[in-house]
Length: 73
Image 1 (spheres, rainbow, N blue to C red):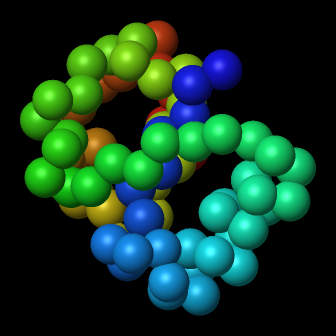
Image 2 (image 1 turned 90 degrees about the vertical axis):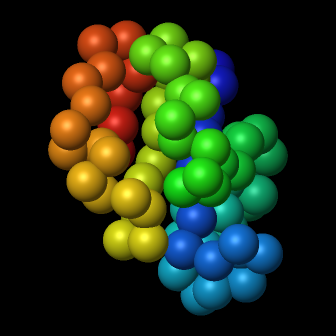
Image 3 (image 1 turned 120 degrees about the vertical axis):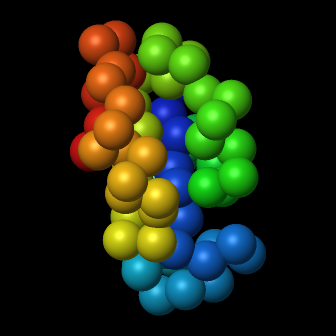
């Protein structure tokens, strides 16, 4: 399974990053890829199974793009 995460902070040091998704993934040894807002234009449907977006993600991008294969949470 391929999971992407759009973090709150670039260095993953915001409490919302390391206490929530990142902390959970690390505790169960789940691999993920960090994607930044600047990388969004390169993402295509199906590149990831799941993409976890945060309040710091470009929410307009996610609202205006439809993914059929990739699930957005």
